[in-house]
Image (cartoon, rainbow, N blue to C red; front, side, top):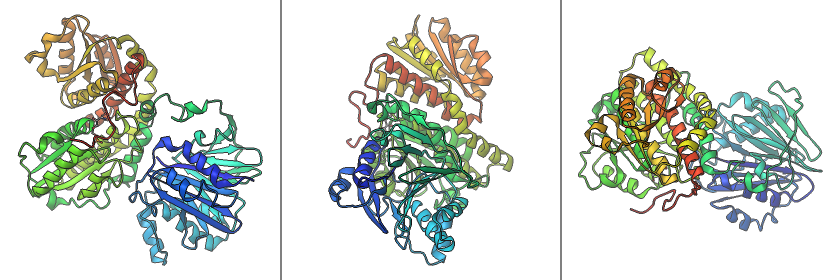
Length: 611
Ligand code: AGP
C-alpha cells in the first residue's frame, strides 16, 4: 500500500520527508518520490526501487531546497513500477504536485474528458488524473481549495491526497476518503501522513482525518473542513507507542496486520469492479463467442493460490458449466496437459514471480491457451506475460503466510465466474443481483468475523499443544480445509492434513484416537447434515472437535462439537471468503503460543523463484 508523508515548517523539508518515508517502508513499495516547494518553485525527485536510490539521487534531500513538501512510497496498482508512474505527479503546467494513496475508479472516464480538453498525460496512473483535474479547475476558480472541492465531487473511489501548489507555497492541502490519512501537530511545523509511524520521531500529537474531510496545513496551524466546506474541530490524540512497535502499524506481526487489513483489501478488490450493480472488467476480452468456444479451463497455481483454484473448480464449474481442471504448477509441465487454443488458462499468483507457475504458464501458452492471470504484484513477470491480468489490489503482503492476498484472489475468481456465467446467459437477473449484492456485503461481514478474534485466540490457547491436526470438510469446505491446514502447518510446524470428509472412512479414520484434534468445517449449507454426520463419526472415536460453521447453523453444531467458531451467513459460494479468516487467526494464535517465528517461518520464502 502506498505511503504518504508531508511536512511544513522551518527546517529543510526533503530530509524530513525521506526520514518519514523510511518509516513507511514496512508498508511495501516499489518506487518513491518527493516534491519540495521553494517559494514559487516545485522541485520533484522520483526513483524506482529502494528509497536509497531517491536518497542517493538527492544527496539525502540536500539538493532540494525548501521547507514545505510531500513524499510518497508507491505500491503500483495502475501502471508498472517505474520513475514516470511514481508520485508526486505534476499537473501539466507544473504548478500543482500531488501524492495519492488509493484507487480512482473513474479515472479512465476523467482522463478521456481531460484529453478531449487538450491535456497531455505523462504517466499511466489513475493518480495523475487528479493532479490534472486540479489544474483544470484551478484555472477556472483561481483558488486551490475551491478547485480541490470540485475535484472531490468528480472523483470516485478511495483516496488520501497530499497536494502542494507553486502559487500557494505556504500550505499543504490534504483530503481523505476510504484511505488512511492523519495530521501531526509539531512546534512551528505540522505534518500529514498515512500512519503515525512516519511522524513519531517528530511529534506524538495527531488527529485522524475522516472520510470527506479536507485539511489546509500551514506551519502555524491546521484547518480541517468537512464535505460541506464547514470547519471541523478535530480531537487530538497522544501516541504513546514505542517506535519499534509502530513499524508494523502497531501490530506484533505483519501476518496479524495483514489479516486485519482483509476487509479493506476485499473492498479494494471488489468495488472498482462493480458499476451500477454490474460487474465490469475493464479491458477483459472474453465475450460470449470466446466463452462458447472454450473447451476447458485450466487453473494453474502453487500453494495457497492453488487452493484458490480448488475453490474455483467448484464455483466456476457450477456457474459456467465449463469443465475446470486445477493443476499444481509444478506438475503441470510434466503431465502432458490437455490444453490447446480452446483452453482458457487461469494463472493465480500473489507475487507474480513464482517460477513453477511461470513455467507452467509458458507451457500452456506454447500449447495455444489464452492466459488470464490473477496477480497481486503489478508489473510482475506473470502479469506482463499474460493475455489478460486481473489485479487483486490487496496491497503489499510481507508475511510469508499469505492471508489478504488469498482472500482477494478468491473474490476476484468468484467475480470472474459470475461475469462469465452472465455473459453466457446462464444467470437470471434476480440471481445475478443476489450474487452481486452478497459480494458487496463481504467487506463488512469480514469486519464482523474479525471482531470474534478474542474467541479464536482462546481456542488456540486450548489446542496449541496438539502434534497432529485433521481438517475435514466437503465441497467448498474441503477446499477451505486445504488452506486452513497449510496455514497451520507453515507457521506453527504442527503436522496437519486436510481431507474430504467422505474420504475418512476410506483410510484416515484409523488415525483418529482419543484427543486427536479435528477441525470440522461445516459452513457449506447444502451439505451441512453430511458434515454433521462426520463430526459425530470422529467424536465417537474420541476426537476433540473444533468446528467452523455459519451463524444460522451454530445451534446445531454446538450439540456435538467441543468448540464452535462462526461466520455470518451469505451465498454459499462466498462462505470460504469469510471462513478462511478464523482459520488464519487460529493458525496465527497457535503459532504465537508455540513461540514460532510467524512472519518468517523456517525454510520458507515469500516468493519462490526456484523450481
Ligand atoms: C502460502 O501461505 C504460501 N506462502 C505459499 O503457499 C504461496 O501461496 C505459494 O508459494 C504461491 O505463491 P504465489 O501466489 O506468489 O505464486
